[in-house]
Length: 302
Picture (tube, rainbow, N blue to C red):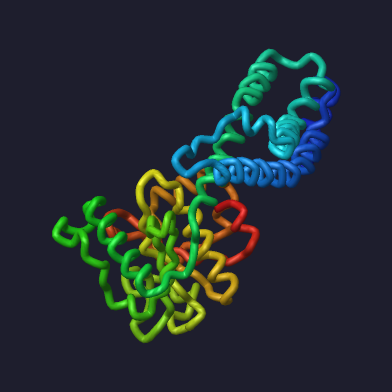
């Protein structure tokens, strides 16, 4: 039934507009990897330009970038890759309705913005060093956790300046983001122990999904970062990479609003995690307990 409907729609598109949806999809899929690689090269060029400037003057000049052959060639490949499926429709299509041209113009205007966002995110991530914290960095990170929790209203102001404390710290490993030898972000990985994991102790978890005593489970949490830095995804990526390398299965308590946002932004995000219990109010908001599925492919989307 569904296949017949799709076949009929394809036949109508080919006969009326001389555009084959299958060709559009094939072009789109073939341009994904070149676009990702070109974006990586753009980020590398921009970051090198940023890094090579004088410390007192950290402004990326467009004229300097346009004189860089690697940047220009990568930018052209990225733009052509993003636009290729739509170029096929415009140049090979016939009798196209006006709204198709309006959508095409809108996409052309949005492509530079899309590239700018990806490049800015990539360059910002490269400005920070992500590493497993030593004792001094852990202490600095714990103070940052309390500071951010106080700012969010999760803790009273009297706790600001003190290091965060709970019974799981002795079983925890911290990953920090550093900039100019200062800890500006932190996330922790709690190893399963006789004390359990916060998410397993605080939430009603369905036993069908996991064995609470299994030592391969860890919990990712206590994320804290200086505002406006854009380093949260880098911390999550570092923690996730640690779990993959050490064959750990990460659990987490994620805000319902964040989960809704992720599903809205990435329709496939549901395959990266499994909800293992019912939502409840936890650390300032409604949260959902989840089990993440540690696959390297998901690092591309963090």
